[in-house]
Amino acid sequence: MGYTLFIDESGSISLNNGEKYFTIGGYLIKSDNKNEHKFKMIKIIKNINKNREKYFNHHALEKELDEVKFSNLSLEGRKFVLNELNKLSGTFVSIVVDKENCHSLTKCNTNEYYNYLVCQLIKYIFETCNFHGNLDFDELNIIYDDRSMKVKARNNLQAHLIEQLKIRRSPRNQFSCNFNLKAADSKVNYGVMISDFIAGLSRSLYMKPSNPINNLLTIEYISKFPYRDFGKVKIIQKNIDNNIEKIYNVVNS
Image (cartoon, rainbow, N blue to C red; front, side, top):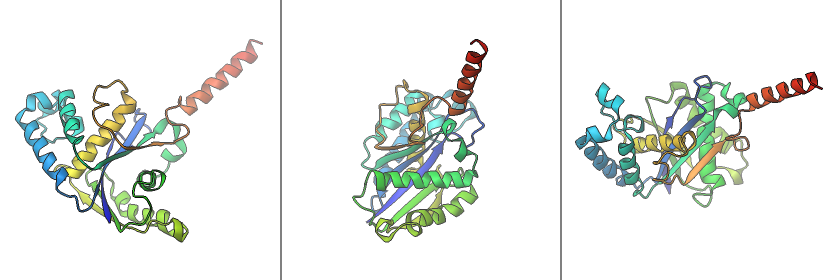
């Protein structure tokens, strides 16, 4: 038994771009189920290209962009795609990062940070949520967008997963699978296309809670990071506010 996990991201992993959330979205399938999502995406792309004025957003139309991805589509386009993806038998997954509340990690090397997050997502799916029932399966193929994942990150991710999920664990707690990584172009790889929409949707869930697209598709496994402080008032700002209040109380006592 083996699985394939397609991944892509939404937002910037950088701390200094003014965005609160960064997400890695994924589409998880059994490795022998390769055709269902392919045929579905071919139909989706065909329908969208027949109705470009309706389904692409103003920016994409103005720039003559033709890639079917979350950021290029209008509200109607996103609704159409998500409703269609909801008919697939695979599993939608994501990890959502509250960047404001994990400063110690976001100051690390971004390649190491990215690898850490992918590892956390895999642990969440297969260990915390017990997706497979145990950690004993043959392989996990990870297919990523070669245009967005940095060279150093993709070179080190396999080694990171082996170290964290095998070497550093006792035999009874080890993942038995081989971790195989493969680059793909999201313009032509249908699984990565799907993961782009999952990443965009999972980010929308927290950036725009009232967005009408949020309830169109269920992401079965969403890992929130950091778990304890996710969504809280910005920790640094809270500390500043507390100090100001203390100073105010002293001055006015």
